[in-house]
Length: 308
Image 1 (tube, rainbow, N blue to C red):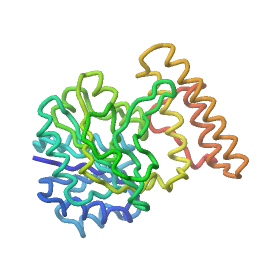
Image 2 (tube, rainbow, N blue to C red; image 1 turned 45 degrees about the vertical axis):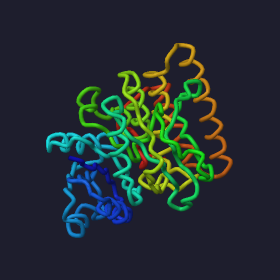
Image 3 (cartoon, helix red, strand yellow; image 1 turned 90 degrees about the horizontal axis):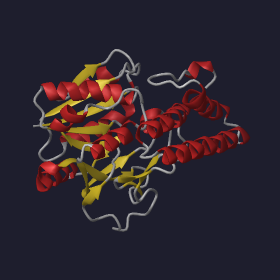
């Protein structure tokens, strides 16, 4: 049994292409769970009316990407799902994507615990957003392979990768039971890097499957556009990077270098935002740095109504 989990927060305009692409898979998944994180744009009502095959789970508030996914994952586990596909609401499966991901797990056997597709920009389908990923512990980030490269077949070989984005990730259910769900301390951003790091630590492997292709509106679910993340994304990507480094960097030296690089590079980006007249972006980065190093916090802490 395959279940799909989608988290939505005021993303009604994104949902039809996402849900339509799932139901057009052959065969389609047995269950689709849409977790609505307290949307105010009529998302839940629209899905119930237009997509009766989709089970809508209303969380009642914005639990973030991690918390919303966990609501859906728990529901899918209770429903008896063997495989769970985590999928962004701003992503669209191309024909055959789900079948290719399932086949990757079947070929890999029990040692392969998750499968990731080739993800392309929806606005430029010939450009790669991510073809699996790897850890760069000196900078404290996950590097998406092939990012912003023209897709010329250079990542068309199935292989194991250290990490993968949860924008689209097929996971065996028993993995969640073994290593736990997504860490809600992150709220949004870096929770999938954390999950990949925990998979690695538990000797699980991720299979990159290029025949599975997905289109993605980068930053669409958080209110941004490619090349221009929203203040929401800037805050959580800044704050959570330090959290990820503290929890997973392999040595003290890696941790020190990565923290120094992170603080320095984010200060540069803050200054660039100020010079460019983007005061809200600068304030979001500043708040992220403060909540990383001066008053460390986790969970939902961004306050856009306070000048950011």
